[in-house]
Length: 222
Image (cartoon, rainbow, N blue to C red; front, side, top):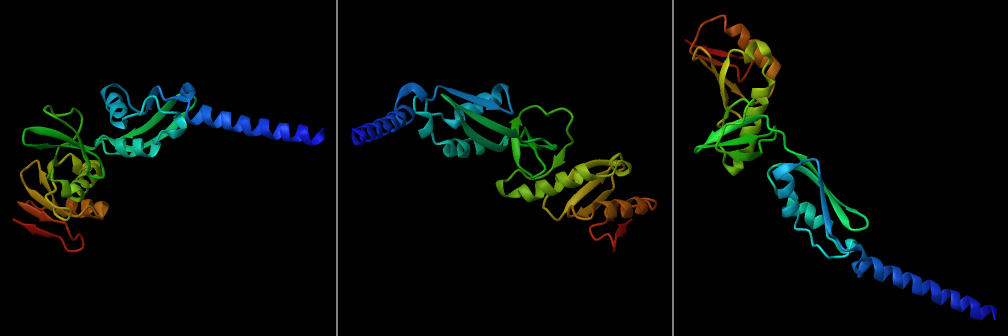
């Protein structure tokens, strides 16, 4: 009798495991029917949800969250993304959006650019409250844009007030235009404090061009 009871209990356990497996992995009880987006809202949240391409009706355990993450990560506006299951029938997409540090105009459009040089948020109107950077919008020009943003946002107040424009044609040739028309070859984004210190000292001498790309050996052109 004891053996029969033990065997019966084992069968019940196996049956329970099988039923639970079927319930979670194959039945409609845990089928995906909702996508939640955290971190952004409005139109971008709708775009994120659509881009994730959620497989509605698929049991949650079988939803490929890695594929959803990879799809959303391709959106230019998204800096970071993670997707996790929210039992019993939802997935949550957590988005960290890119933060614009400057804007670039190209071919009649305005692009926002973050501190890594990534372009996003293309529009026909210039966004308010952001400085303008003159830099290429080519796909391989992110290092140049990042250098330009670093210089543009890293200028000390005493110098920032004198700068009319910042151009970054390449990563190593960032150039400032001062409000009086003089130009400054800043070079790379390295040594910003030293370059600013040297330039402010050089401005005591009126000139058309200043070169602080090598701050230990600056140059002035009348």
